[in-house]
Image 1 (cartoon, rainbow, N blue to C red):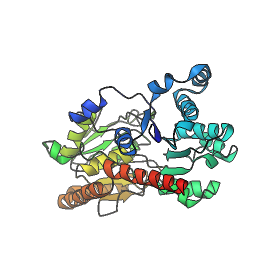
Image 2 (image 1 turned 45 degrees about the horizontal axis):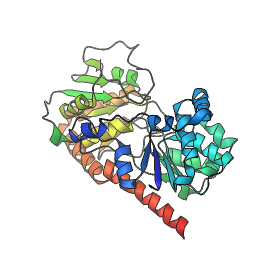
Image 3 (image 1 turned 30 degrees about the vertical axis):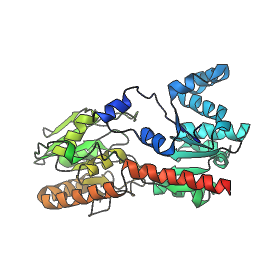
Length: 356
């Protein structure tokens, strides 16, 4: 019996491992985590087979993530660690553990953003933080927020860098077709109106890949008049890798949010040896090293963004140098293997402490 149960907020495709092996898609983090943790995976399908009548009722009331939390609660006596893949599962599980008893299982929770009203209610009024043994956060702003608002000890709130599958997103996997083109990728809190204004009239092609498999945000390019040098389209991950290879550099325009919006695309571009110009939002300060691996500009400042873009267009050797440095950082710290190893060490440390 495995010691760790790992949730997957979705349905795992039966072909996922085959597609990874054939180079058709990046390796999902949960596959590598399950391998390194020697963990059991619990996705929607696996949970649905175990919910019972009460679980069915909870699913009708609260959706599939509440269903995952309920099954984790039912299985809590069989594991030493339950590792939830986000607050959408971790918060309801913490509430269930608080109300129904944890039976010595430890609860590790990935955190994207807790500084929003509905989520904060569970901590402010139910005190569910008592049943989250380790918060694993991607943004230093979120770490400080959790520690200060709910007086959670710093050793229970761990800042861990996000990651990218550097084996898939690698310049060695593609043949570049370089052209005078820059790109921008994703949907989550993307400030595309500012980017479009910044590049209007510039002598450069701009490709905006306004899509995301995770975000429910609307495409902010939809109600903006596009200049002739800007194209908006969708790409598969396979096509996106080619886009990174072909571009001069990537631009990540963000609204001033307090979590790491844009981090997936930023790391993908860095892994592809591309520098990134990024809006320095409150939450996006932990990955790019300004003037070494990329450039920061103030959020929603089209003039500053235009100047940064023009600077890299005028100094291609600087862009290439920073892109090479960015790829080195990914290979050293921000790749899937390093990420999973760090999380494994946290789990092992917690289990050793428990045994003492």
